[in-house]
Length: 115
Length: 111
Image (cartoon, rainbow over all chains, first blue to last red; front, side, top):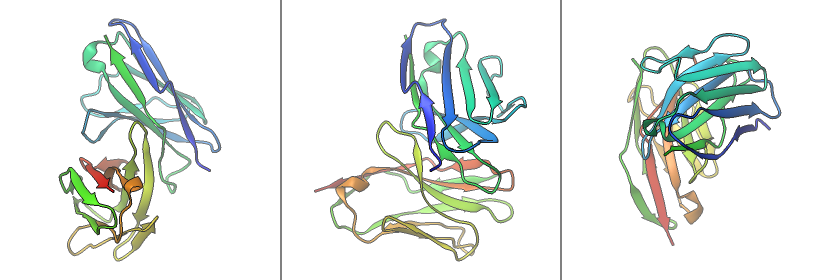
């Protein structure tokens, strides 16, 4: 149980385009989803926390207009990287949690490469 | 603020060797502590956790004990296998339930 699916797993696109990443909880309802960014050989940095039906809470230094997060249902959250540039290339990982007493379950990540 | 300090890697061991990966933390209050494992190209998987002092988390032969007096949560395994090769992250969560991760330790087990 507690499976989180992330799609796509790998995306390459041109500079200036927007890219959407989906995060789905397959067998549970996720009231909260988290988005992380991981640079090569580094740890995960929390970008934002989203609760279903509410606006996402962004961590300090993360541009809200650059990284659009939508959490429209209890099983789906999306991260859209707008007008992506090479410096946005990274590994993006989502996690989902049923409630505050449950652990976070992680997706397999999306490797984003901007040319 | 909260922080997690992890043993720097990479760590290379022979199969069946004993493993210790050190982890210490700084937090206000009484956080929950976790070890996550990340296999190549994948997301993180929860390996084990402990929610209060002196609790021992265990899974797949790995163990870690929540030591409040030394603010530590060291990961141990008595006999490692090649399949244990991965990156291991120590993490804590506080009342806000946000996870704070260590920098990760890359473990390579050679046959």
